[in-house]
Length: 276
Ligand code: NAD
Image (cartoon, rainbow, N blue to C red; front, top):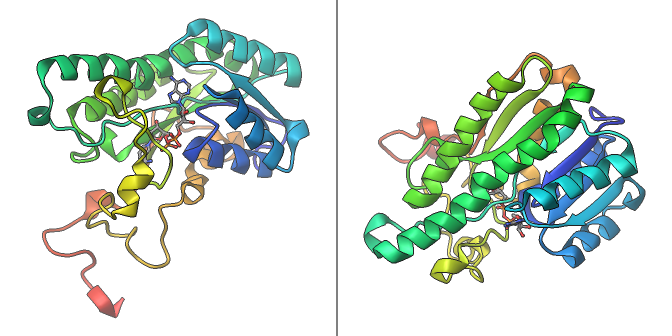
């Protein structure tokens, strides 16, 4: 495996792309700590992984620096080192546009979403960098199509994912030459992504939106039968960017794995249409 002997810590590793990356990293030979809010959910990920001896579950909230430091300490106690951190835990705003939010709702949604999607990433980076310096390790942050394009969320989510893209660049600059920092801008995936409790979206899941097929739109690759919105199909770029052997000279980059949103044209998807 490309990550043989490496130790990774993944926030939001209890479901969705975080869990899929955890399982993929295990398959590549890594030891993996998953961090999230729900201990039972994390324990199930470990139990079902097929490699419980190479996994660790730590419950906590990414808005708490103390929780994150405890997770890093537990990971290093258990596995001896930390090579890879994946800031990933996040929430979505279910495309709430500016015109559909009152000032009070906007303020509350912003505070909750930014505290997880942006402060959570920054606090994760703060908690891990000392260990990553020791191993000449790396961070691979989960970004989004909304880190580059409109309509991947409302203004609150889109601003948060542009902000996270800024963290990739700035932290790559600050932590060079010892720690590489890159991002994977994943596109729409069928996960359990939730929304801010402050505007009543805590119990709603993006899976409901996929059930109504309203998420990927006119995407060049995703609607094709041989493509997928399963998070497992988005894990390859994480392995690439986490691997010293494959991307030892790449930092401050964000790889867009969104089915080709940037190559949409005026017309329907694919110039060749049905003939391809
Ligand atoms: P998910 O809900 O399945 O996974 C996110 C995990 O983060 C969950 O396990 C959740 O419990 C955890 N989490 C949320 N808030 C937390 C907190 N305060 N502290 C600790 N853990 C917390 O959803 P997902 O789609 O896998 O989301 C992962 C990342 O992918 C997010 O950053 C999201 O913005 C990004 N993303 C998702 C999509 C998509 O379509 N699903 C598209 C682009 C980017």
